[in-house]
Image (cartoon, one colour):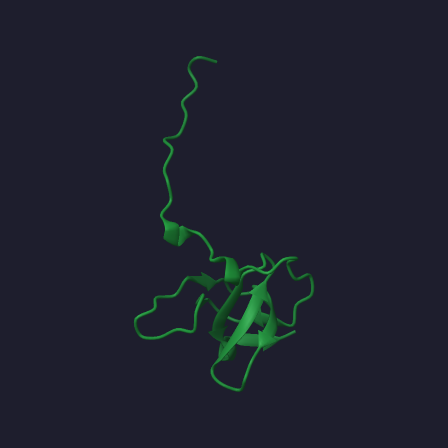
Length: 93
């Protein structure tokens, strides 16, 4: 056992943490839409200076929570991640 090699520990930056206001508990277990192709999501409504917080993979199931008729909507995925993304990239289940 004295020959075990351990990986080097690293500390992730604060930006790696999901803001509390973007987490829903309990997580959804029923979904209304599916992401059609890889598309970005945002913790806040995007602007030219705000980079995406991440991307949904094609086939990700989400529940549509808020859509006011504009190009963006708010959804939650199976992890409880509550984010803004483009409504055009979603397909109704």
